[in-house]
Image 1 (cartoon, one colour):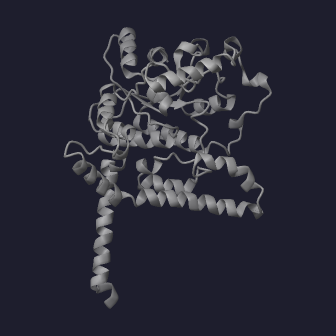
Image 2: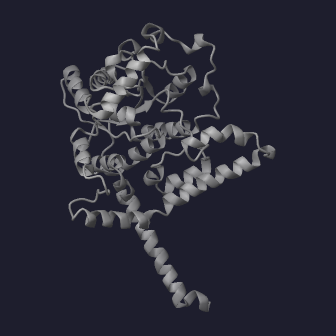
Length: 373
């Protein structure tokens, strides 16, 4: 027993207590989101403590494709009443982050009437960890990830070597199963143990910014300005057509328009293409399935209307039949009108709507939500 009552043991216990307290505080305050502009925007919007009737979740397609101001204006025209909508989409595809952000919102704000969650040709497909996932994860989600192990890859580039690894000696898939378990355990431990690091970074940012903000990054002098602008627009991620990013994206849209015939893609049906439906394999797209079910269950408990919304890409075709079927078992589904959204002027780049396209989409979505059910 002497070893347990020694000075070393007491120091170790104190260290463990301090680390636990740091982890609790960092998780409670979402200090991990102070590292990048977009996560910081979500942190600020959640902590404004301003109720909202409608929340939007998804990837950069939603962040750039749904403009709360346009949605609210159309709602007023249709219903004659005020409504507040907030865009809580992150950058990159991760339904896991959408679920965790909704949980965070519900801890700080009344439940919204409706949430709109992105689904799409690309956004439902990732089977690797989003690079920011561990900054959003809490201890409950860390345990959940080890239990369900929904991800197949650590990074998107690991998919390229998946076929080669599949050909290696692996009796009964034991090695792959162990690697998958270790991968989820690694990420969960990273999420569970990042509290002290987040707390130190949070304090350092405050000092480095001269006490002006907890959001600071070296070589990013506009970070605070970007955060403030996005918060002012209720989370809308604006890309102006004349910005370099906007100009380059339009060039790619023009190139694709010459290759993808408008009429053909508007009328395209997967059922007629002879191509397999990848969503028919229930062993694929596990993160989308797992967190889709969790979102549905959470919304049912809190009395929230759940709507999945297809965010269109430039002339890529409709959602897969089984993809549609899956989302309709969990909630309502809003499908974009391809005859409208496959026009060139509605895209700023092949994966994101232009400002005009976002205006059209936001108004169409308001019409869908306002219609009698």
